[in-house]
Length: 359
Image (cartoon, rainbow, N blue to C red; front, side, top):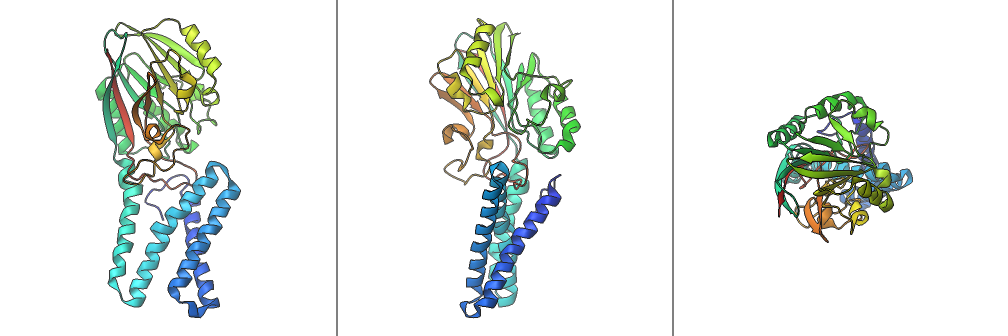
């Protein structure tokens, strides 16, 4: 019951059928037990019962999988079960007007599962940096987090390569399913930088041997490591913190000391929460992802949930200045995996093309 089929498709289809069946079964039971209450009341009770049952199931499972199950429950009920119910009422009551809300919900489902996830935004921006001699071009991508490769991913790659960046940063979360590891490795090899491409781990990368995965892709893993490189006459330090040590201030201090004097220091970390770790240190800019910009957002007011400790304004993606630190957060290219619905609403996938300019 999804426009987006993936390696988890059979499991997720089974869940969609189970969630929809629960709704209809509870409504049917209520209708049979209390026939005088009316059909609408039975459906309302069935909807409430289905929500409660699957929310409890998600709470029992716990963690990100349990949370994803809860999100899937609401998405399935309101974009599958209810539209089918409206069609049933339209036929039974001979009221064609009920087909309109059913159609609108179906259009919204198509928008969230097909249109928005493939509607790439390529954002260009510049940051003025004190001490820089000449401009540096940086492409920032994050949260590939995919089950497959689509035209949108190839568009992202073309946009990066056409930009001819000096540096490419990938800030974690590679794939939703191990079946496409080799395909993603080939994809990463297609990104071209003039002075280096660097990556750090994300929270769905823990099952991967990252040093082996990134081998021959052109990307260097910088979890708890650094590189000092020359870029167009500038001395640039690129420092990385892995997911296990993003809050380890003593490690970051040690890495900065080993790095020594440079014109600009760029810190990579999957989570933007690392801005607290870098506070007051000689870091020019932090590059992060993780939040997906909220992924499922209303058309106003910013993200509802970001799974991050930073402000919603920062987690929404883009560039913010926080006490002298440039915080660069990408909304990423992908979507939550597992049993979560593959959905983006009012939160387009994003590639950031930045130019650091002398101030």
